[in-house]
Length: 135
Image (tube, rainbow, N blue to C red; front, side, top):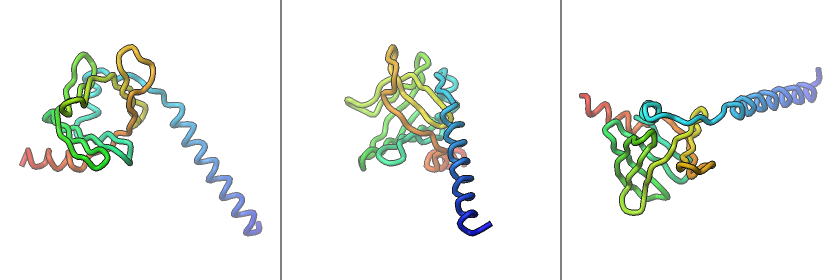
């Protein structure tokens, strides 16, 4: 096999693996979470878009928000199987939470489509807060 053939084979294998990962991700459908499932999935996690904003959900019901260089803090709670966030005047609300893997969509009652989209990740800052609380 020539080096050109090996490179072409490697590229095809790489493309095949990428396609299978994308197919698996696309196959996972969004499902609506109950209040208990929201609490289970969000405590100690960051939710963000990996670029512009990130919210950190702590066990004590507080949330730290970073958006476009601005830091805010507030509270979060579960009410009627919705995630309710309060970050002060004119910010927050209650949302139905839909999940596919680590991808999250916030939706409003009766509306079909995301109000906000993000990805859940383990939070190093929430872990540190929990460690400090229990030491």
